[in-house]
Length: 324
Image (cartoon, rainbow, N blue to C red):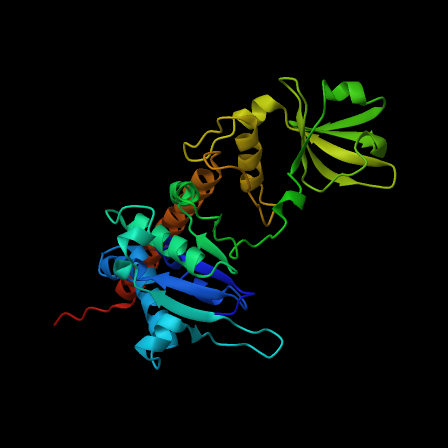
C-alpha cells in the first residue's frame, strides 16, 4: 500500500447499506476485516430485505478477488479503474482473528471490537498512512476513538447533496411579529383562501413555495408568486397548518405542519425533507408512501373486479338460449 494513500476499514453496515461501497474510495485503499465477511455470511440467509444486500456484497467481493492468490488478497488487489485520469486503490482482507492480543486495544468478545482492533492494528503498521474506520454505527465510532483510533467517519458518498448546509431551509422565520415588518399590503380573498401582495423589500431573497412564519402563534404563509414590485403570500395560519391531517397522521409541530402541507400540495412535484434524526421526516414520508401504495393497489383491485363484472354482464347479455 502506497504511503500517500488513505486506508479505509469498512464495517459490515457499510456494505449492507451499499454493497458496492468498496468501489467508492477513488485512489485510496480499502480493507475488509474477516469478521465483516462472517457477519455478511450470517445475514445472507435470513428472510429479510437486508439479506439481499448481503448476498450482493459477497458476490461483488468475489468478482473482485476471484483470480487473486491468498498472498495477493492480504497484500491488496487492484480495484477496477475507470480511466487513466481516475486511478483506483487496492482491496485487501485482514484476518483479525490472527491478531495477537498484545497488539489490540479491545477484547475479542464482540464483532465490533474485532473490527476496531483491525483498524488500530493497521494504524500502527502504517504510521505514514491515514487509517480511517468507516461505519454508520455512532457508538462504534465513539468506541474506536476511545480505543485510540485517530480517524473515524460515517459513509456519505451516497448523499445526493454534497453541501447540504447551502440548501434552502424551505421556510423563513421573521423576528417578532410578521406584520411589523410590512408597511404596505394588498389582500384579496377567494373562498377561504386569502392572498397578500407585499413589496419585495420585506423579503428580498425569496423562493417559490417558501413558507413564512414568525415568532408569534398565528401567522404562517407561503410564497406563491411575484412580479417586478410585489410578491404574493397565501395566508395559511398556524392553526390551519397544525390542523392538517392525512389518513390519521397529524403534525406535532409547525415544521411538520409545513412538511405535510407541501406533501399534500399537488402543485409541488418534489419535496425534500431534511433535519436531525427523530424530527419525523422519515415517518411522515414513509406513512404517506405506504398509504399511497395501499390506496393505489386497492383502486387497481376494484377496477379489476369492475372489469370482470362488466365482461361477465356483456357475455350474459350476448348469450342465446334455444329451447326445443
